[in-house]
Length: 65
Image: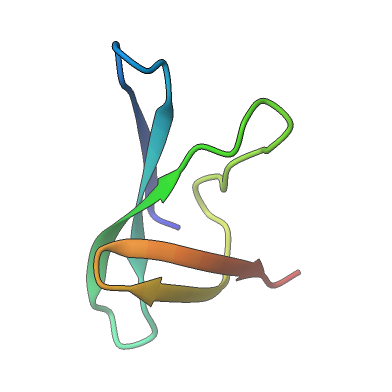
């Protein structure tokens, strides 16, 4: 995870997170992840892991420790 940013929808109050991910080949892309509520801690800058994407959406992220 290179950069994380968020946007809040004023009408619904929902939050969407946007992550810029850097892949092994050096390519980068931005992917959206819908907010999961207050009990969910979104990914942080610098996390390393395996990203599962579908088009512009981040479907899952498995952090490597």
